[in-house]
Length: 213
Image 1 (tube, one colour):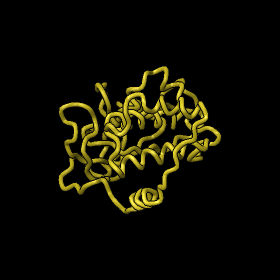
Image 2: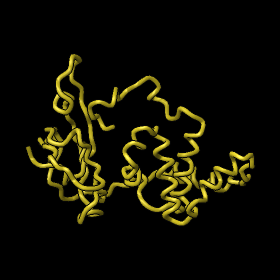
Image 3: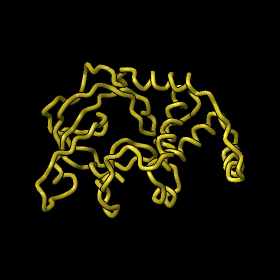
């Protein structure tokens, strides 16, 4: 929950594991297939943020992914309204799922996953440089944003320039290309002082989230 208070520890036993149930890697595979074959529409992250709050809080990580996967497929027209529910009923009634020869599809998905690509573009002109002191803006944007709530207002130092990337936030500037920085914070500045020694918190942040400190 992004370091918000009241949601328990961030690190819990078993959190280093990629999956905890056998169905979870299938959900990830469904997302990968929809990306490679252009079967889904919309950002899964933005869609997950539209889940009803009570459902979101009850759901596990991959249950949220499953929820957004279904809605991406519906938006694209890959599946029809009610088709998923109908299949659930047929499987519960004992019908066997269809067998599909997915060797070629698996090859293409693995090939795409293994490709050495970079989503970040080069940056020639930037507002900040490594070593600059910055402050994350205090803001309450409507809709999707990639600026974590818990770091807004915190002071940090630019550690590195990552490159450029289209702004993913909702609003009139959506998709405008701007610089992305790795910014380092003290845990005391972000979460407050604790009994344990402070540690470093690194976040990749868009240029429009920052101001000179």
